[in-house]
Structure formats: structure tokens, C-alpha cells
Image 1 (cartoon, rainbow, N blue to C red):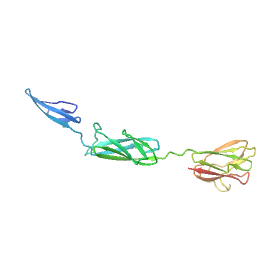
Image 2 (cartoon, rainbow, N blue to C red; image 1 turned 135 degrees about the horizontal axis):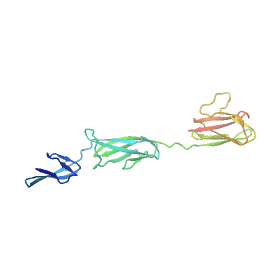
Image 3 (cartoon, rainbow, N blue to C red; image 1 turned 180 degrees about the vertical axis):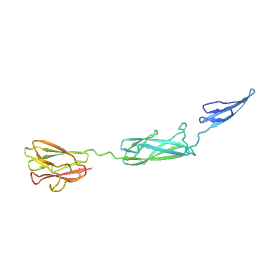
Image 4 (cartoon, rainbow, N blue to C red; image 1 turned 45 degrees about the vertical axis):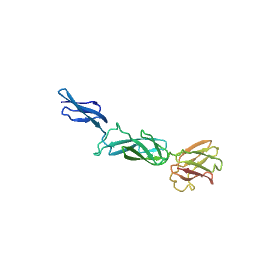
Amino acid sequence: PVIMPSDTTRATVASDGMITGRAPGTAQITATVDGRSGGAPLTVALVPVASIGVAVQPTSVAVGATAQATATLRDSAGGALGAAGRTVTWSVAPAGVATITQAGVVTGQGAGTATVTATAEGRTGQATLAVTAPAPAARSDTLFAFPVFWSPAEVTISVRGFLAIVFQQNIGHNAIFRLNPADPPVPGAPADIVNPIANGQIRTVRFTQPGRYKVNCTIHPGMIADVVVQP
């Protein structure tokens, strides 16, 4: 007999009559012998989804940045299934941490941990995404050396910022970054400016740790300012 399917995109038939499903749908299988034919319908169904693996790359983003979520559909034996003919729906929780499109693009909205969920044929799979707050903007400030005092008496900067010291008088000043010059250097403070500087010269220094520091001009006793360093 000659056995033929009506739609070879749905199924194919081997010479021994073995039928192989190719795509979901219905095909008519017809056998012909000595000019006479008979047929029967064949329905090709998708192998059911048994589990879903979800991956998010990268696994951590800052607020406003994006990551890509992907889903791997698997059968009961753990084999990967094709996505053709299947619908995967994406969701993310909690609200306010991230959003997701149906293309799996996740956007960080607020600091926290988001759970990304893929759903297909009643099965779900999940992965997590860490969303971090953006780094605070760098904050810098300027400290002016007058004859016998600093101005302002207190400045605030951030670890990512800097302190500009303006030695604007013709009188020389130095800058020791602790109250007692005999004490060892304070962790996080910049190197001391030991030699006198004057005539409008500027020195830029950075602090590597948050905290409250002193700027002490030992050439003019009592000339002390505070530097508050924020994270």
C-alpha cells in the first residue's frame, strides 16, 4: 500500500507505515492499494510541559537597568521542548521592585529582590533578580584658608567626591587631617599637606571612608575646620 498524509508539515509517514508527528494540528492519513483508498484523521498534539526552568541575566541590576529573562520548557523526562506553538506568560513580584514585558525584559524599579515567573500550560518556573539602588551622586565642596581661620568652619562631601582647599592668602598655610598632629594619621583621611602653601594655590584631596575629620593648620594654632564625609 501507499500511505500518504494530507499535510506533510503536520506528519510524515515512513515506508513501513510509521507516522511521525511534525507540528500540532490534524492531518488525514490515506492508504492506497490497487486503486482503492481509505483514510483516517490524525491529530498531532504538543508534548505537555512538565517543568519550566527560568534564568535571568544578569542576576543583579541597578534601578533603571534591564535584564533578560529566558524560559526553558521541559517534558516529564527533562528533555527540552521547542517553543513553537506554545505561549509563555511572564510576571514579576513584588510591585515596585521591577517590571517585565512579555518578551522577558525585566527593568529594575526599586531596591529589593524581584521574583520572575514564567507560566506555560499550567506550569510555572521562577528565578530571582536583585535590584540595587543607584549610587548616590558625588558631593564635593571647597574650603578656603584665610589668615587665621578656615571658611566655612564645616564642609560636607561624599566618599565619591573631593575637597578642594584654596590657599588664597599670601600667608602660608598647611593642612593636617587630625586634631593632634602628633597622633598617627586617621584611617580614611588624605595625606597631610605639611609644607606651607599660599598665593591662591589649590589642593584637591579625597577621603576614602565616611566619618567626621579635622583639618588643622599647625602654622596658625587653633585654625581648625570639620569635614563631614558621607557614604
